[in-house]
Image (cartoon, rainbow, N blue to C red; front, side, top):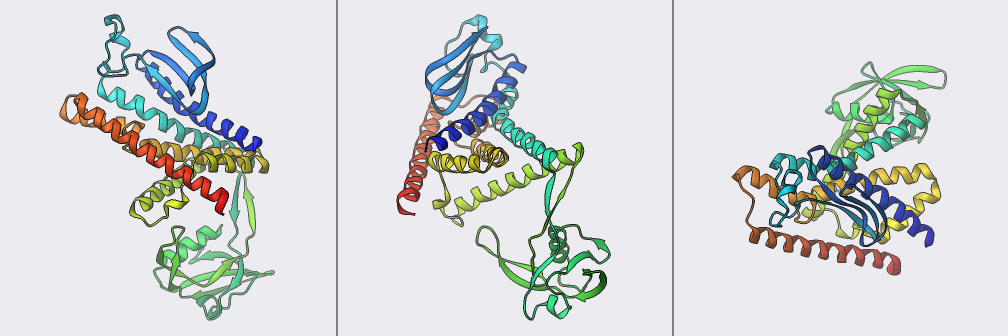
Length: 355
């Protein structure tokens, strides 16, 4: 349990630090004064004041914040501080300052993936046949366990993903498949058929297949700097896309809300990844960082996305929302977050005692 808590604090600390660092750096770039940079909430444990900024670690390690000069629109501030006031900056500068937090979380994921790909390359699933479905197009085409697909329609196949994409894109037309079996090669003609397959959300999707399963053989491909950067951006994009789709499916009711987890589940997963090694833990941090970015972009008042929504409305109508509307929105946002936190804690406790 103590190992889980320690891993949780480390993981959360890294995520929060990068998130708040984004706000801080862009605020300073636009000349906004920062009064406080805090990791954690509540009483100050340790810290150091440099200029007007108090850099601190606070007692409750469940978040963090950057407090800027003139952050509250209706707050009274010293006229001398107006040039460094957040509220007195152009609305588009305020948008960039607020957006910088979640964007830095995405950047953290890119940096982590880049480091992993540079250190160990990428693992690629070989297009080797592990089994052939009885009566399938592959069986009729003469494919057997142990075969290696090397090209489709004269296009080189390097991975199982390549092969799957080409078969899917065939649209059901006949394809020429070059196969390596032992020391020999041959070409066979196969017509993929349409089959209903469940995706990761449990939804039935039609796609073209030939009726083979992977053997599970992998090989490692080393990447140069540019390839690693491209792959890290691609990986971040894919995880971001999947996370957004999951949120949409949750709202639509197509994914069970029982899959949601809170601090307890994160602590358990962080501890598990830490036991598996530093690489697993770092990869887990990248995934969580992307999830944190997407969560903060949700248009819920009190989250970054809620502030961005207010500023976008301000940019459109040419003036800030009135105080009463902001207060109501903030109260609604807090209520939604409390409900969400209560529900994920309930899920966590249910998993512990009833799973």
